[in-house]
Image (cartoon, rainbow, N blue to C red; front, side, top):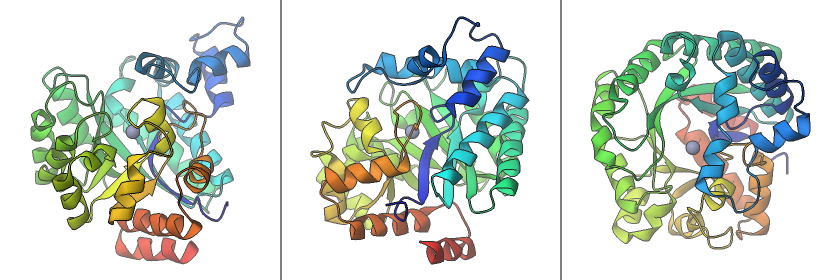
Length: 332
Ligand SMILES: [Zn+2]
């Protein structure tokens, strides 16, 4: 089993914090007071049940965001997450976060990224078996104009750190509240700057959003489950060899997919789509790479050979050089 879950392409830093680290930092920063027990804190950081509302899911990000507003906290949270991934036996992980939500105490997006990279560099030095890449997320809050300047700055800042630990950009947040194409200026700029990017699309939003993301030049699709709802879009996903970063438990918790057994990736994978299995938010969803693979094996009808194929898809689509990919391939 440990042999199978070695690569993660879709993992959010704020949803995957090490609980002890987060508890300690929250106490230090007066996000919580001494009356809080670890159990109470854990409850607030994780979805309350198997069937939470979207509001309950989003509430789980309140503490992580409140905690990570200074360089030390950003660095420490990144470090301990990578340490935990190393403990799980992962050899490669792309970790994503949105620099613009960590500016409440005056950090610039560049300073936020620098702090995360500090944690990444320290972790990779201490745990040489794991390699990581950082993805900087733009955010959608329902109207592309609200934070367009902050999003453009995310693209510019990500480009400044490209090759120094940052590997790509992304668009995350509340998908489906406004047209996907409203975000085109962000990806026009990324293209101009030769910054690679993945886009959350077809998670909560319709198949047409996956089509839009492909039209905007996405290198990969975050989730993409709903591409299975439209035969034309699904055909294009397969023909273009788009890699889908699917997170089964997260999709079910957020009511984007009905169940493991009826998850759209089963149909997508069988039809030839390049599906990969990821955690999304390890702490929030109480999952790991291994529990997700276990679900794929026990409830989604996939075989170990299928999982191996998906790991190959993940490595082939990683934001890495061909040499680095070849190195990883040897290790799986
Ligand atoms: Zn995500």
